[in-house]
Structures are given as C-alpha cells and as structure tokens.
Image 1 (cartoon, rainbow, N blue to C red):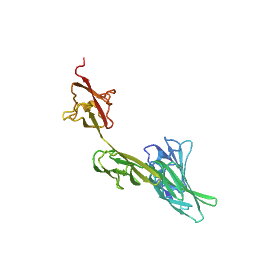
Image 2: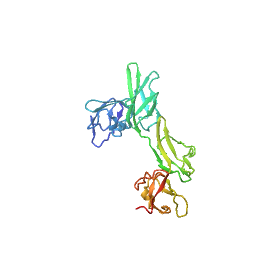
Image 3: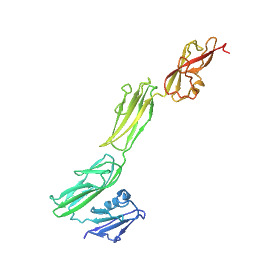
Image 4: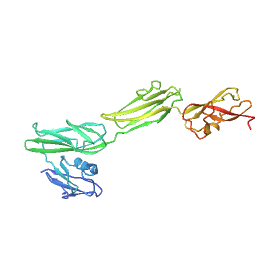
Length: 321
C-alpha cells in the first residue's frame, strides 16, 4: 500500500490529526488540519504554510480541500489508481500570465471539468489558467468516469504586476534626447507621445526640441489582459516675465525687459533677483507693477508665477503732494 509524507509548517498556526506515522500516511487516509486562526474561505491564509506545502510534498495530489464552520481543512489523499492527475501542482504567476496545465487521464473515457475557487484571482478554461488579480486560489480539475470521480488541484499564487518609470518630468525648455527608464516585472512596454513635436521612439527615447513644447508621454506595460500605465510630463520649468516700462524706460533705454524665473516662484523672488530692474520716467516716480496697462490691478509680492506674463510699470507724478 502506498505511503504519503505530509510536511506542513506554520509557526504553530496549524496542527494535524491524526499525527503522521513515521513511515507516512496510508493511501486514502483523511487528514484534518485545524487552523488556529484565519477567515473562513480565505485560502490566502494558508499560502506557503499549508495548502501549497501539501500539494508540493504529497506524491499524488490533494483529492479534496474543504473548509467547514470550524475553520477546518479536510484533505483526502489519492492513490495510484486516480482517474486524473495534473501538473504542475502549484503555480506562482504574475497578473496577466497564462499557464497550460498538463492533464493525465487513467482512461480516455474520463471526462474532465475544471473550476477556479476564486475567479477574481485566476480563471481556467480548456486547461489554461489565467492570472487576474493578486491573491491565492485553488484551481480544481475533476475527472469523471461513470459513477466515479476524482479531483486534482493546483494551488495558484498570483503576484501583482508592477511598472516603474523615471523620470517623472522632463524640461520642455532644454533641447535634449532623454531616455525613459521603464521596468515591468512582466509583459511588453510601449511608449506614446500626445504631441508630434515631442516624439518618443519605440525604445523610449524622447526628443525634446527645447522650444517650450509640452507633451505627455504615456508608458504602457501589457501582459495578456493586464495593462498598467504611467505618464511622464514634458513641461516648462521656467516662465518669462516681461517687464513693460509703460511709457517709461530701462537703463539701456529699452521699453521692455524679459526676466526668466522658475515656475512657481513668487513676484517677491523676481523683484529680488539679479536680473530685475525697475524702470524710470521723467517727472515721475516708479510706483510698482500692475497686470494691466491701465494700472488697475496691482501685482502682489506673494502671488505665484505660473506662466509667461507681462506686467506693467505704474508711476506717480513727482510733484504729487
């Protein structure tokens, strides 16, 4: 009679009845595994600690795994005359992966049906398991011949698909060829730009003209039906503030002066920068800046500069009492 070794570890979280004899369990022995804590029906509680180990260490497959109201797993071992046997007994997959299961039947007349205990984690069709979302499940294959039936199962662990992309942003004002670094743990990566003036190659090389043209680069990782996306922003990092002397003039006798500042800086930052200069006007005193030529909307020092803008000088007559 065949003997079966059962090796289950779980740091004291589980225990087994009856205790395993030194030479292993007899063929057909039912083993009850008591789970000291866990949630009824959540097979992830046992991943790598019981179900996966059972499937890896028993010569034949687990015949039946059920959980009752006492959170008890009932495991029945199969003998060599089983109607069906599958390989592999366990799988570690990434979301979107597919894996074909090898099914061996004891007789050509055996009819095989299949079922995933959690189709949110993995599905099965025509012997092919598809990983859907991260988690753990059991995929059972049932062989039926007349009144007899046997079940063989595969413990499936699905890991999350990941996509990491750098850099997060690219300076639109600097002419450059920028290589995107994109790493996915599965699948194929593609790149797409929403602006033909800022193209990206099949290998993720972005050609930035340096003219301030902005774009969004979409990085897509596709593994079967699983798709992950990330984006890189090609954006201006600087703004040009045009200082309009508004009938006055600057030291070089020009009527306007451009100052380049960092986007997000304040007007206070502008007014204290080395490139800043206040204009002059005969018989007038410079009296600040406004966002309109009429001098109605004053510039506030704490306001943030978020785009190119023109501001206008305002004056007060020198003879004003």
